[in-house]
Length: 269
Image (cartoon, rainbow, N blue to C red):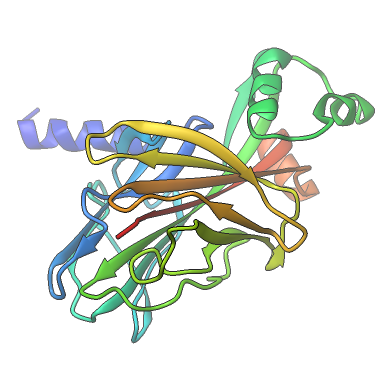
């Protein structure tokens, strides 16, 4: 096999493999670019704002779109592309990438692993709910879907984030590139376009040197939380919702639980 074919085969095998139930996000070395400069973006899977780059695979993507001041358009990378987006952006302003995965699944061999995950993501009374449904505490399946959004400043970066129709979504209520966020960045979490109250947002703060600090905040009765931010740092915000899968999805996947993962990435100017 020639080197190019081997490299493509490796990328394809990685793309086709199931994702682990860690964070998934849109990442870049630069979230702020000049007008006409390329925005270069990767989809990543990992923990603590560090992970592996995932090559584009059509079997994984349910939705991939770009949004600027003029239009919302579908992004169509080639199979195996990494970065998944690498294009010049001509319109000055806030630029957004959104990616929704198709449902993936994984199997938990024992309850302890799922319990650790549930506590980490602040799911309440999961064991009681699990037992009330008469479910096995060994070798049970979860299905999960990712909803990732990345915010970029092109030129001045003016503009406002908004709901983009994702089933779960984190929306920045101020622009981290143009607004005063010295007292924190207000964000709002939505599920089916309604605010998620008392929901945990995990905050991953990455310095220019790659040092990552992790903290959490809870949303209020309007689904809003204030995220402490610093100029020059990059941020990944993560919110995960746990629910019972629909009957159709349960039959298709064999899963007894479903998680929906919302991610928002950006820098602060």
